[in-house]
Amino acid sequence: MRVGKLSIGDDKPAAAGFDICPPKQAGSVVLKPPLLLKNREKRQSSNSRSNVVVSLRPGMVFLKGYLSLSDQEMIVKRCRELGVGSGGFYQPGYGEDTKMHLKMMCLGKNWDPQSGQYGDRRPFDGAKPPQIPPEFHSHVHSALKDSNALLPSISPDICIVNFYSQTGRLGLHQDKDESPDSLRLGLPVISFSIGDSADFLYADHRDLDQPKKLLLQSGDVLIFGGPSRNLFHGVASIHPNTAPNLLLQHTNLRPGRLNLTFRRY
Ligand code: SIN
Ligand code: MN
Image (cartoon, rainbow, N blue to C red):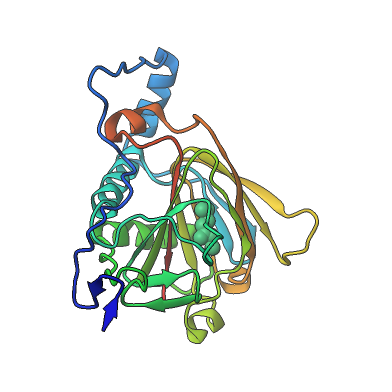
């Protein structure tokens, strides 16, 4: 079967994926961050995990500053490597003229925003999503354990990676395209935030006037499952220039925010 110019058996679409860490321009000047900021970031870069665990509502747990700077760097670098290759970052749309305000890459299985379905290949270019790197699995596993949430544990087979530029956003929606069993059992979604901070909104109903707002900063992990699995949620805005300086220096991550959501189909 052929999809556009590619046959379903081809694993290497011609177009390279969007580069979230473009190479530094020759002659570009790196501004030195103030000493206080540098010291704070050094403390954050230690490998100790945060023990700030906040239960926001039944089934929804927030692990503030959970990912160390070195964890974040590793995740950015792996996403960059995968993102520029086959099945990497692209700008998805819900239809011909409605592009989403972010770049996306799926790992494990492809999620197609147009049909709302998961599949083994991307309909528009036939590319197979890369596998979820093993290092990511261990962070998901520890986060679930450290959350002490009364939620079933999962071994994720899907990770949707979104990159938001500083003007990126995502409207209120539910994650409801996983299998009926996954939804029925309330299997949790685990979200990692890296880079610039974001205003994350959540509510029981889409038409609620005042959704709750949560500031997600670099290194934060948010888990929602069980009675919170069907929450409406979205990203209202990105706070420009709030990413940790050391992360930017070590990875050259573009201005914006990387978000990974792990799920079980
Ligand atoms: C998502 O709902 O798929 C992503 C949420 C986020 O970027 O925090
Ligand atoms: Mn979602």
